[in-house]
Image (cartoon, rainbow, N blue to C red; front, side):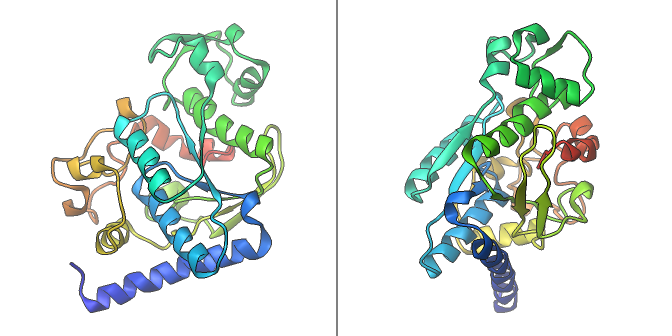
Length: 275
């Protein structure tokens, strides 16, 4: 339960987010937009606020886009499927089938560069990868680029997407502490030009949970089991057994349960187009 003062604080944060949506809808049509929806708490809040904003302004809700890295939690997949139906969200699923076929859909199996298509080989050259093979692992440097960033950029180009909404917060990761509410991404090698909007930058992790619980926003059940940040299944660990919102959010790392070499490489990954 939150008191009246806290409720006013949360309502003000939601209104600030709606201002960001307003700026985006003044520039782009819903058909040119995508909501990036991972099934995590942050992107789900972005979707929830956007649904409110669209309902209040008689606007069509943009399509949503999620990325399957080939190592997903069943609970997340079920959550996305359930609430895309219940909320009437048109949800597109992105996946790098070329890489998955090359490793026979098996985690840890080798991916040989000769078995990849030209786009994926070009992407590996772009990040300076010069080996003949690598084990498939979605959160390695090469794996994360191929399974997430490449899927994202390919989808934008093939669907003429002009702008995306991201569930990113200032307090989530040091690499994001200077992010702006909107960012123009110039066209570059294998990266289409687009604009990124980040409507919940000003929310803290505590704000996310207070808002989610107060407004009864659905969330993936893994958070109740102790996970605080959800990545791929094999490299995401729960912080403790208590629900995420009952943990010491202010004095412990939210992403401590995520694979740390990827966390350290976040700046390099973002320069390649990672979100």
